[in-house]
Image 1 (spheres, protein in one colour):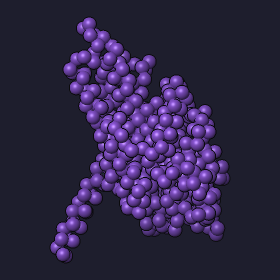
Image 2 (tube, rainbow, N blue to C red; image 1 turned 135 degrees about the vertical axis):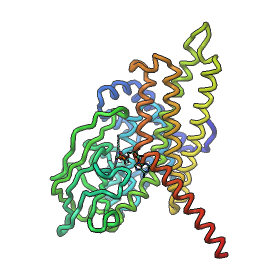
Image 3 (spheres, rainbow, N blue to C red; image 1 turned 90 degrees about the vertical axis):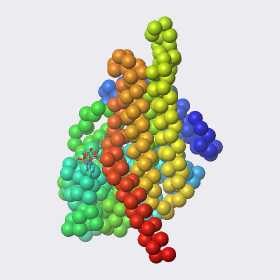
Image 4 (cartoon, rainbow, N blue to C red; image 1 turned 120 degrees about the vertical axis):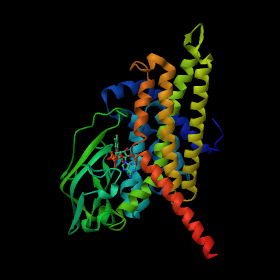
Length: 395
Ligand SMILES: Cc1cc2nc3c(=O)[nH]c(=O)nc-3n(C[C@H](O)[C@H](O)[C@H](O)COP(=O)(O)OP(=O)(O)OC[C@H]3O[C@@H](n4cnc5c(N)ncnc54)[C@H](O)[C@@H]3O)c2cc1C
């Protein structure tokens, strides 16, 4: 790996996450995948190792050392090398926490962040609905003010950590007449009357992660749970993705690296035609391409995470979308090729490489599909071009 100038703290959390991945995740990854079990024992280990603290400010019992997003990326990548489904208990919690970090008041941060930092409570982020996927502005869940409360009605679809998390950051319409401009981000805690969960989804990959519907039926939530001003929920959601998408890039990176490590070892040990299969140019070139793509993805994901930490006031939409989109495409390419390196054995559940291929697919879909990322990237490029032209004309 290239020298990415990790700090002493970042090297320490990387090594810690790597050790946990090797000792606590890799040995159980296939079992958790097969049985679609939520990884509570691993969550406990991560909490005891203080890894949920790495993206939460010191003021709220976190331990960021000034680099929350880079730290989140490093830990996510290491855990995903062993099992992206298990890693999602960590990464999905980060996604659910970011709206509180970005838009919460001091009081709200003091109320929810210490429990998340300690790993006592997991979090989840709820935007998607049956009719509102890529078109996130089409959400219909309502949160209508009634005295000191909001009354929530509606359904959120496919929510990561759904049913397992205690803290949900939910996008709902406080002023339905205004559409997305009438959306707010509201924290709903598990156990609130009127808040229930649908069945756990049976999935292709990331099977250790829990994905469930959230159902709100006349669910009364204190008005004090609204993050930021009413009507700013959609902006909070978009700003959240700006920060969280490098985290999906990191999941993809871990998946790609995990599959590549297995493929390289197999290519060096499996023999055909009286020689290791890795001695054949057809496979050597394939592996060279896999390694190049992984390193390029890592450079982009790390640079984006660092940029977000160093320029917190800038909107990193362009690079966040690029790093998520590029790294997830790399993960898909690399894991398909890793299965190819394993030949027929790669197709069998007995070997872990097919699991990486199944896990990779979701990184091209969630937090905005890669078509949506390309749409956003091109929109920013075109808009930047037009503002350069008008500035030049005005000069
Ligand atoms: C396992 C899993 C976990 C998830 N976790 C969460 C979560 O924690 N929180 C949450 O809020 N959501 C979550 N989601 C939802 C996820 O973000 C959405 O599935 C995703 O945004 C795509 O929406 P959709 O599935 O409705 O697809 P659609 O929007 O219906 O898209 C279908 C296809 O059409 C394409 N398409 C749509 N619009 C355009 C366009 N304008 N230009 C080009 N192509 C387009 C898409 O790229 C896609 O290929 C999760 C989903 C899954 C499967």
